[in-house]
Image 1 (cartoon, rainbow, N blue to C red):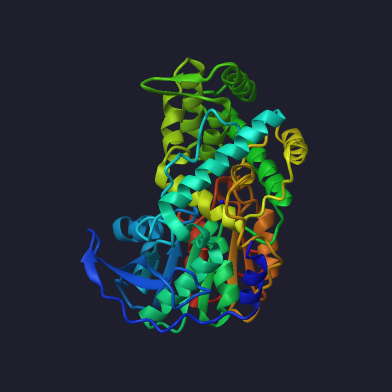
Image 2: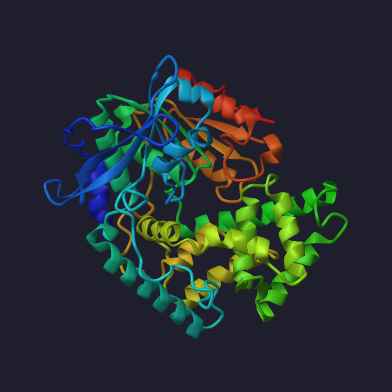
Length: 471
């Protein structure tokens, strides 16, 4: 954000990637990276049919080389090739850059790998994802149908072939082109879905795999939405507590929850003005606040200052985050198109959606059900291409020990998902991060203890002791 039977059959009998020629590398970027491309089938069910090219970037090991590490930053829509090429220190630690050839691959439909192109914007502030009436529900469905039609017109048949199973097969084709018998893998957020799928399909190709900020793709949509709703509300409450304790918070000494509720209510009546920009709706305010909470406490000060600014009649700071989170055409097009193939929303009409909305709003009095998984649910209603890789029972066997990592207070991927994903991967280990209060989304390069533990595992292959918690 249906070929479900076909996907299941393929999962039970995965076919190896066809033999690939070596990659023709050329120097690129300012950090001694190498860029290349790998050709893969457009449709893995028709391996001799049309093909697409994947953008691949390699940052060669700067020290004693241990092997090859695939990195995926999440999203879906995160441009791993660009990150590894231009910002390698923001991808992995200096230790991993020293020991591994770090590989960034733009997944199909993303960045420089035949990016999804939609002729209509995914986000329309005039169309509510929280419909209050059957008429608003019909408007939402019509909007999504029109967007998906525009994506199909702009992208072509690839739009139905960008599910995570296809991406995992692509990654194995890159592995083969590199001439590697096994790879290590570091995936964050959506990258954990991708990593788990790769391990399921190709367990013998894995050397080590760390999954940080885990998504358990076997959970149904209602469970995903409910868990995410609770996690976002919990993070908002922790932001309120942070402001009460942190004197530099622009809302310190005030009733932060009341200020926020009043601001959202005001935006419900009339969107908050933005200097030199489009006003902010109440739904946009809540979603942007969620994005800030993903980086709590680092972005706590920015969120508080943005709320004060919006309270004074100019939501410019919050609107700057809206530009990246909701208005960026490339990232939102890939995000929506991929997840609508991977997540079955489980909604049958307005009454069904309304009942789910009533439940999540009771669980989140301040954030009102806002979460990425609500966005996936509402955003995929009416999508022209049904899920080709929907949630299903996940069982990963025959893979070396995998490390699953979860923050104690992650608003995007609750700790319970890390626990459940770990239970589905035979022989895996769970690392719990409570450093910095366990706040924010994912821990790698954010929490020193968790980063060190992940690095140690990826290098040695040895899991941390059972029950390890970074505090």
